[in-house]
Image (cartoon, rainbow, N blue to C red; front, side, top):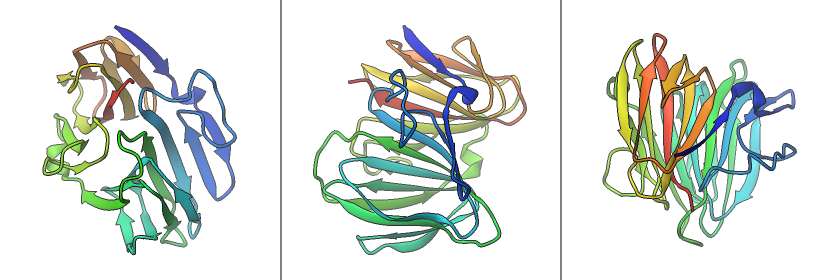
Length: 237
């Protein structure tokens, strides 16, 4: 078993006025040679965007991009012809593939947007770009894991071009669950969204993370009411 602990206060931070961003891994002007990625997980940004502001049209290619909305409404537009608002409780998925342009703007002038944006290296290059959006079913989050991302079309949640599984859950204090790693040689990056959890014996608080590999399963125990956690089951090579 191998592991790393990333504390919330040790993340990269940039406040641009309109954007307050925390970076779990090296991104933009933040660089830490010890935090460039976790296996195929390249980016985990915790972003707050001021009203009426956002990310203007910009390009991506050969990256799987997952956006988990936490607060507010986000106006999305892309070169594939999609134009819609992403609401709190929804997850947006894009395979950039051979190349896309997109913009993400706070749809409200007087309310912040809060989101997690996650990038995963794909296992196929230059695929046709694709777009998807799912709405989370809150009833499936209570005291169990709810799959939101997998490699397989037709399974619960959305899918990406990578052997990765993302699961979220909200747990009452004292609830303990085991999670089995989906594929040999995958690791798990466990990110506590809210509350306090013990993950394989390590206490993690809000926005702390544990990356762990060379294991078959791990245990998660909630130490606070309504502890919320995101597990990213990711190829390490």
